[in-house]
Image (tube, rainbow, N blue to C red; front, side, top):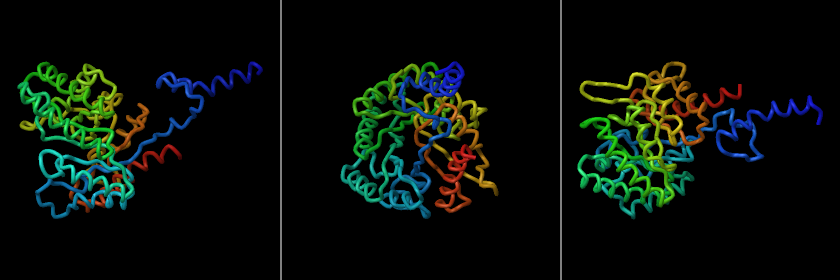
Length: 315
């Protein structure tokens, strides 16, 4: 190889080597595909079912129909939420039926959203233990369904100082992450009100826990730190960039669209570009929460918006 050929090959290999250094991989089959975002789409259950189990939802669908409806809308992966299952704890018979329905529809379960089970960062040790025990039971249910991730709600209400809350959160999340690790599962904390919507606080929590299977479900719009008076994190794009290195799943929430099909409350391209910049390769869950459009239409428009972003890299 002459000097000119050597310099040319070195220049061509530079992006690949940079990728290898960042990811710790020296796979000789690495190519330039990482330049284009590789998002996988899933569907969040709240897009179709807006009420917890037992509450009437005139426009909603039945839980057992959810996998097939998702498949008809073009999804091969779905999330579930414990609030859509009757009872505080999972029913094995229902889980078995749900798994069968998903298999019949040709979709997989990726993530179980869990909440309303108590605060694993509660100041009361007994309450923390009770909440953790309930979450552990649901994690086993998630594993049975075929999920590889479970999201928990942590520190969504501000009642004590951030430093004190962080201490209890680290204890509770560490315990849950260790349990999840035993089941080969990832434990995710969502930016979901309160201190968890403060990206600096949430980042400190994840770093202090320091476990590879513990990360963040990054929601596009959940930046409400206080309800009364209403206080939002001032710059959601900055917040998302802070969290991005630890995001393992994405909640792409949408409400309204303009005539061009763009979401009017959040710049989807800006959010998705942040993920692309950090080479995110996981699932992006479509979560249409609007009322102006039929739910299936809103889901489809959200899905198309994400696909439009990915396609823009081909042009």
